[in-house]
Figure 1: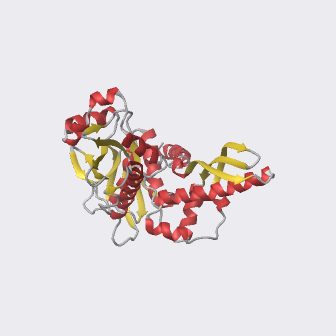
Figure 2 (figure 1 turned 90 degrees about the vertical axis):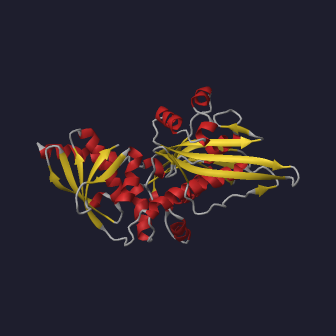
Figure 3 (figure 1 turned 135 degrees about the vertical axis):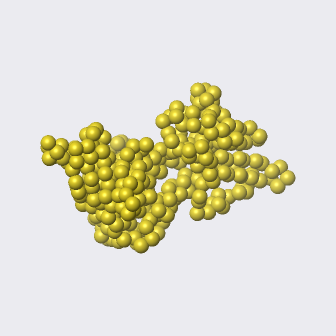
Length: 365
């Protein structure tokens, strides 16, 4: 019976793996403009190749840290078409003078990983859980949050890339949200109200992005105050960034749009650095025993699938089959803390159960 269950699990795991993190490798609607030389087929082919290259740069920015991104930029001789799984021309516009195409590209996950490994580049493909965003904006002594006039909210949404590793959730600007929680309650750290609001959207954590813009009449300049913090389990803590002065504090004109772009970029780097900081110092492969409860076959299938996505299919072996659980041995240079960062996007965590620091149980939380 156990052997039969194992065969079913393997079948569904292989199917689930083909969809795991696939949206990360799908870059949507890259626009390409070329002068019309009269050869439509040639223009379409050139636009396709340009879109492939541009999309791959976008993907690289999403999954590589700055050091490895520099290594990637130094690679010039590679066949981009071997990394593409499929593509779609979303729209085409042909005029007498120009050719404009919008093309979405879906990269082959295995080939991309093989490409970077071949070139000695480490990937960062740990997708975060979804953080709810509180975009607080103060202007002329007035606070905005879910208000229609909150342009800070609009610019943050505009700059955010859905294919990023850091998943952000922006609640709608509407009356229900305005009545549920105010900017003052967030600033005053009203954990009860924040928890209620998070529960409303089925989120566990939040990022508070508070921007204050003032105009100094004497100096004729705009002054910016920015505060980024994370809310988790009733505690608001300052967001640990590489630099506290990544934005211009004084400007001769309003730069909210620019600051939104800088903030989104800093948040992405914060997530990548968070993963890097959990790396084992020796960077050597370790062996862990991991138990997954199998009373619910469907759940155990997906737990195994996500674990394979993190450590790699070849680095996870079945050690023991029991009536209500399966014990795996995994080989990885990731620390348990890093693995948990990878698992938390699906509300999973790895809990130490043994006395020798290498036995764990994976469960939902």
